[in-house]
Image (cartoon, rainbow, N blue to C red; front, side, top):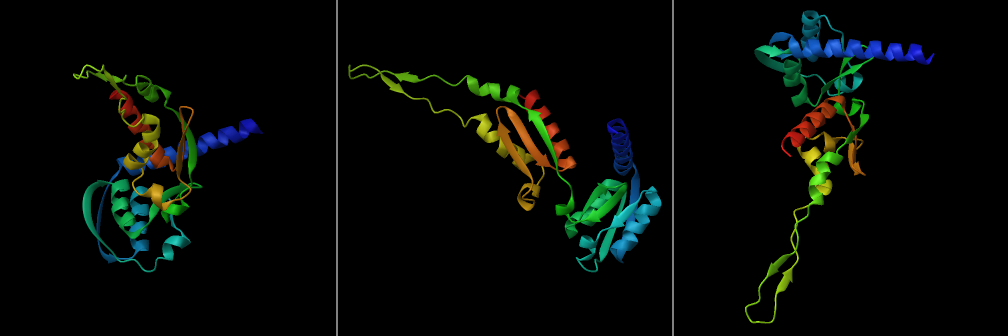
Length: 204
C-alpha cells in the first residue's frame, strides 16, 4: 500500500509541475474591458487547455470588473496582474488551478540546514586596547559586535521573501533552531527562500 501511495504522490507532483511549467512558459495576450472574472478565466482555460475553478471565497468578493490589455506575458504573470490587485491567488489543488484567497493556499513545512551560514559569527572581534597617556596604564574597551547572524536570519528571510504573506497569514512561520531553519510557508515562498539562501552562500 505504501508503494502504491508513493507512486500516486509522484504522479500528482509530476502533473502539478507540468501544469505550473505551462503557466510559466506559455505566452498569452489579455484584452478585456469591464469583464467579469468568469470571462477572463474561461478565456485562459481555453487558451492553455488547463483546468481552472473559481472558489466560493473568490466569488464572495462580489462582481469583479476587470480591465486589462497586455500581450507577450507568461500566463502566470498575466494572471498575477488580474488576481493580486483584487486580493486573489492561484493555487494548485486536486489537479485544478483554484482561484481563491491567499489564506486558502496550503502551507508546507521545510527544514533548511544553515549552519554553514552561521559560522561567520564564531570569529567575533577581540577586545580593543587603548593607551592611557596619563601613565595609569591601558584601558580595555569591550568590542561592539555586529548583530549576530542567527538573530538576524529570520528577519532577513521575512524581509526578502514572501512579501506581505508573513504578516497576512499567521500560520506562516520561520524559526531558527540549532542551525536549522524551520519554515512553514507556501511552495512559491519556499522557492524564494532557496534562492535567497543560495545567494547568501555565494556572497559569504
